Length: 337
Length: 260
Picture 1 (tube, chains in turn purple, green):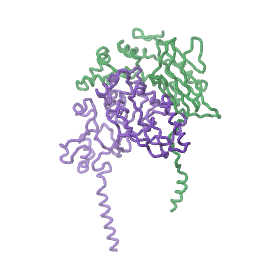
Picture 2 (cartoon, each protein chain N blue to C red; picture 1 turned 120 degrees about the vertical axis):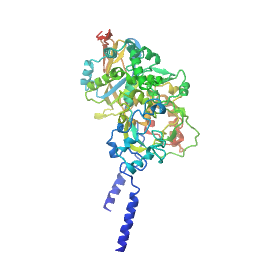
Picture 3 (cartoon, chains in turn yellow, red; picture 1 turned 60 degrees about the horizontal axis):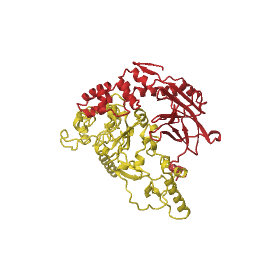
Picture 4 (cartoon, each protein chain N blue to C red; picture 1 turned 180 degrees about the vertical axis):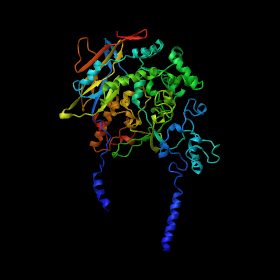
């Protein structure tokens, strides 16, 4: 009987100990606001977020959501200890939070709770520029990552395709690269040593804020600036790593023969893509490469066949790929070319 | 222990090593937007084409609707909005269908009344920041000037399709002037190596004083890329496997749109 009582007491302590680690409410972790709880999902985004926030003038220079919702937004449901537990969501310190500085909004490095919805097809239709703009800051849109230095680099004879360049500019910093390898395939050998390092300007960037979107959608054209759900759909929380996964790192967007082409010459399916999540392989199919580079691709494919049939180490394709990818078996698309 | 009896069959049924890079299965079609119209080489750039299963006969209802459709021309649309001649001239200068199509310069803002009014409104809204007001001025343009023409065409396309879903759509680029359809899913019924499809622009393209609409059938197979060149027949003649509908564009005079 004594043993039973002791076990019961130990269990009780263990349960209380475990409960002390539970969130203050089902709606919250200790230090983070979560959008996806049942109670928060019932609320309209605008019941907490204001667009624009009063500090837009100094923080952005254009009307935008640049700050966290005020205390009143939380107060209406949360109070006391439960409310205090939320301080770290916005404030850098838990001490005298009302005066403590706040993190930048959105908080850098925080978990992302939303995906961005962007229909390329609709934008291609309505923007549909027929003219090539040369060496000018494009359109009346705020370029996502426009800098004067970037424009200065554009040669006079290099067209800048109005509708794509609104959102996608040449990168100024090399992204973190990850070799995308064929799923379920085994490499034919160890990767050869390779010193190739792609430059930042090989890549195009993406809009990272509201600037580009609001230039047209701030009001009147749906989804407008206060219709958050028009562009942001709830997602399983993820960390935005800014990693770029590619089969080929050797494609240089700025190379003369590439830069004089319309983006849609290679991104052939983009004009029918209504959802970023369904985009296939950055929308560039192998046949887009073959249309100009068939000789070189055939030469390398020939070397691969030759080495394999001669029982030699497999030739590692390096015209488009780094050895991390070029050592894998040729996919059916390449065989069919 | 009972639960484990399912593990072996599950393990055996799990596909191992069957994941490959997706092969480019299906057909490939390029629609060439380089057309000779009245002995002049034209480039139909940034124009959308739609691909349907079946040929001209099996899509007769759609083709009949296309022939009968009375579509408002761009000129007539903007003319009916009582827009300034400066605004219409600005659109025409670069073959634009909306003010989103090209840069609005400060000079344009000064000379075009619609842009000037929108700029002034935006300037007040963005607390007197001229650069932002210039970039954002379309947020204060009248809805019909902004995207009214696009919305009208979209609604026309929905009416013409009446629930019919295209297999794919594609747009011509501005350099190679081709609309590429890839990975077209082929049914290859009855053991046929190819399948018949219909390609159409649904909404006529305006070139000069006329509008042009194509509905062409094409045989697509798995083995090679098909190129469909668009042609305009000489008067009284036809193009094989194609319905080409050429109409005169109505003319807008003194704010009124009338047939030519």
